[in-house]
Length: 187
Image (cartoon, rainbow, N blue to C red):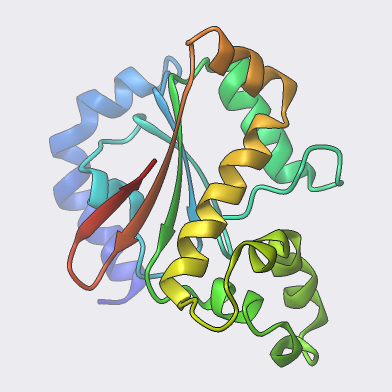
């Protein structure tokens, strides 16, 4: 289906069924979850969580990376702060996924020498490499460690750490295995 055909189908079939929901959303949003995941086309946050419009506030980027605060990545930083400080979300989920190209690149940074912007972006997670046993680690290990690192970066945001300490905010790490539909919940 082409994008324009999809829009037409949405307008003619889906929107009429959900019009009341969209009218309610016109008044504002109050999502309970900030969902940070990869921009990989195989990941669909609303489909995998079975959520409706207005229920997820979403950040998507290559490798579901949360740069440390103050590093100049204002889009990600502003979205996190808006979700936590203004929308008062109750949870933040960092969701990695199987077969992640960003983590594959991270594990083999020299392969990205011809792609300096991508190398710089995934390099924001270079600490993952120090956590892995280079001889025995797998891509899956790298994906899990990358999610854990992003959760640690979130805690470096003062408003996030305050909300977590006050038990007003919960942080969760997930790995979505899209080939099986399984979600692995990390400690």
